[in-house]
Image: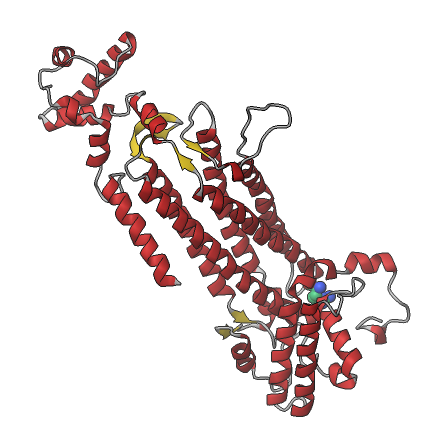
Length: 459
Ligand code: ARG
C-alpha cells in the first residue's frame, strides 16, 4: 500500500514501482533516517504538536527498529519505495496509530534532504581521517628521504636537482588542500533542512533549533524552498573528491613511471603489486593504475550532479533522487582508493642510488653553473649563454659538467675557477636551494615535522 493511497484507485504498476524506487541505494541512510525521525518526534512532543507520551512511544520503537536493523533481525523490504517509507511503514505496523503521527509537519522532501546531509557529514569525517593518514605517511617518507637527490622535471625532461622527500611533500600539500576543501564542504552542509516540509514550511509551531541541536547541526536553513531544492553540498563534496582523485591520479602516474625499468626510482612492496598470467618476470603497479583509472568515474559523478541540477525549477523534483548514487559512488570510490593507496605508499621502497644516477645525467646543475658565474660578477644572460655552450660541448664529447677539465671552462670564460666543481655538485645544489619552500633537506624536514605536529594537534 502506498503512502498516497487515498487519492488513487489502483495499485502502482510493478515495473513503474521498480523504476521509481530508491530503496536499493538509499537504504544505506537508514540509521540517519531513524535518527532524524527520533529527533523530529522528540521535537514534536516538546512543542506540544503531538502528546509527549506518543512521542516517547515513537522514539522507543524507532530505537528498537534501529537495533533490529543492526542485528539483522529486520530485513529491509526491497519493494518499499524508499528508506523513509520503509521506516515509517515498519513503525506503524508495530505501534499503530502513534506511528502514523510521526510524519506530522514533515515531508519526504525535507526528510531526504536531512538524511543526505547527516550521512555525508559522517562520510566527510571518514574521508578526512583517511586523507590525514595519507599526509602523515607522506611526511614520514619525505623526512626519511629528505637527502635523496633526484632530478626534478619540467616537460618530463630533467630540469633541476630536487630530492625525493621534496617531491613527496608536494603531494602532501595537495592533500592538505583536499582536506581543507572537504572540511569546508562539511561546514557548509551543516544546516538542518527539516521543518521546510514539502517546500513551504508548516503551520505547526515547530522548534527547528531544537531538532538541529538534537541532531548536532550547527544551524538551521533559512529558506524552505532552498532547503528542499538544494543539492549544492553534493556538488561541492563531489568536486572536492574529484580534485583529490586528480591528485591521486597524478601521483599514481608518477609511481607507475618510477616503477618502470626506465626509471626504477621506487619498488612497490609485493603485497601491493600484481604479477602477470603469462610473463613470469612481471611486477605490475596495478593499484596505482586502478586509482588512476577510477578518477574518471568520480568526474562522471560530479557531471551527473551538475547536470541533474541544471535547469531544475524550484523546489523538489524527482530528478533529485539521482543525487544519491552519484555522490555515494564518489565517496565510496575515494575511500576505496585511499584504503589501497595509503599502505602502498607507506611500504613503497625508494631506490636513492637510481635517483642519484638519473640526476647525474641531463645537466640538471646547469642553472647552478650559470649562478656560479653570476656570483663571480658575470651578468645572468651572459652566464646562461656560456653555460649553454659548455653543455653543448659536453654533449658533443660525451662528458658531464663534473668531468669537464677546468681548462675547458676557462677557455669559455676566465671567471671560472677550481671551486666551480664544488658549486655544481648535486648535493651542494640541493642544499643551497634553501629559500622558503625549496628542496633543501632542512626545509623538507621542517615542513614534514610541522605538518605531522599539526596533524597530531588536530586529533
Ligand atoms: N526517494 C526520494 C528521493 O530520494 C524521496 C524524496 C521525496 N519524494 C517525492 N516524490 N516527493 O529523492
